[in-house]
Length: 138
Image (cartoon, rainbow, N blue to C red; front, side, top):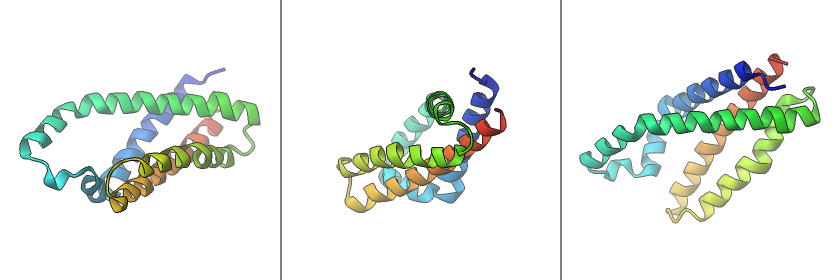
C-alpha cells in the first residue's frame, strides 16, 4: 500500500535538502560548474524565468524517486535495513549513472567531476532522508 503522505513528505524533504545543498553549502561551486560567471545578464534573467517550472519538475522527479524506493526496493527487501538499502541503491544506480554523465559531459574534467561530487552528495543525503521518512511511516 502506498503511503501518499510519506511520499509527499519525501518530495518536500528532497526540495529542502536540494535548496540547502545547492544554495549555502555548494551554491558557488554549482554556479561555477554551470558557467554562471560567464553568462550574460540576459541569459541569467532567462534562466530565472524558467526556475519555477524547473522546481516543479524536480519535485515530481523526487516524488517518483521516493515512490520507487518505497514500492520497489523497501517492500521487496523489508524495512529492517531501510538506510542500508537506500545507500545500496544510491551507490549502484545514482553514482554509476552520474559518473557516466560526468565522463561524457563534454565539460572540462575538473568541472565535470566537481558537479559529480556535488550531485552524488546531495542524492546520498536525500536517499537517506527518504529511507528514514518511509521507515517512520510504515
